[in-house]
Image (cartoon, rainbow over all chains, first blue to last red; front, side):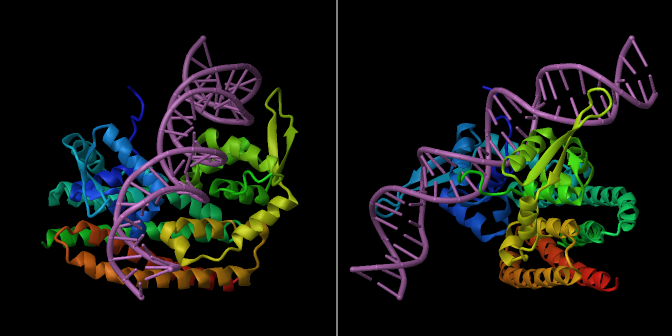
Length: 184
Length: 184
DNA sequence: AGTATCATGTAAGAGGTTACATGATTTT
DNA sequence: AAAATCATGTAACCTCTTACATGATACT
C-alpha cells in the first residue's frame, strides 16, 4: 500500500497531543477549538477522520472506555511507530523554505517538543536554526523593499514591512526563549 | 445556480492582482511563486483552475493575446462584477474571530487595497479596527499565560509568548502604517 | 421541561497538492 | 545540442469544510 504516505499537519498535531497524554476525539476537538491549534483544523469533520487514518496506519491505538450509560469515549494513545513519526517530524530543523511557506509550522513543532521530552540542548539548536533561517529570509526580502518603495501604491510596501518586523520579532523571541530554556 | 457560492482566499488574491493590472495565468503563477503570496497557493494546479472558475462566475474576463509563434497568452482582467466582489472582500473589517483563525488574511487584504484605490481614511479605519481586534485577542490570551506557566513543560508557554509578541507587533506596525499613510 | 453539553460520527462537495504532459523559444 | 524558461493545462488523490444526525446526561 502506497496510499496515505504523507502525514498532514493536523495529523502531526494530533500525534503530538496524544503523546502528551491519551485523549478522546472529543478531547482533541475541544482542545483545537479552545487554543491556537484552531488554526490547523476545525470541527469533528476533520478530526475524527484524521484519528481513524492515524489508527489505520498504526500511529495511534484506541480503546473504548465505557463511561456512565452509553457515554463511551474512545481513547487514543500513540504507538511506538507513531512516536517515531512524531519524533522525526519534531526534529526537522526550520528552514528558509519552510518559513517562506508558513512560519507557523516551526512554532507548532516547538510547542509540541514536550511530547517527546525533547532535550533542552536540542530545543536550543532548533531555535538557533530558526534564527538563522529568519535572518536569511529577512535578507532575501531586502530587494523587494526598495522595489516596492518605488511604487505609488503604498500598501504592498507596508505589508512587506509587517513581514520583516515579524521576522525580526521571531529572532528576538527565539533568543529570549533560549535564555529561558537555559535558565532552568 | 447555487454552486460555487464561496470565493476562496486564492481567488480573492487573484481578483486583486487582476484589478491592479490585467495578467496572464503565467504572470499570476510567477507572482505567487516569487512573493509572499506563495503562502496562499502554489503551482499551476491551483491557479489555472481558479482562474477558470472566476471566469465562469463572471468575475474575470479573458482574451487571447497572440504572442510570437504559438506563445499565446490568455490575459485575464477583472469585470465590474469581479471588482464589486473584490471591494466587498477588501472592505471587510478585521475581527477577533478572523485573527484567531489566521492573522495573515487581514494583511493580505491590506496589501491589495491599492487595487481598488482604497481611500486613505478607509485604510486608516481598517488599521484602527485591526489594532482593536489585536488588543482584544491579546487580552483573551492572558488566562492562558498563567495557565501554561504552571506546567512543567515549558514549550507551550513559550510558543504562546511568541503569539502575544506577534499581536503586540501587529499593533505597533498598524500605528506606524497609519502615520505613514497620513504623512502622504 | 427545555437547553446545553458530552460524545461520536457520516455525506456531499469543493479545492488544493503532486505529478504529469505538451510544445515553442531563448539561453548556455 | 542541451537545458532552462515561457505558457498552459489535466488527472488522480486526498483532505477539509459544511452540514447534518444521533442519543445520553447535566444543568436551569
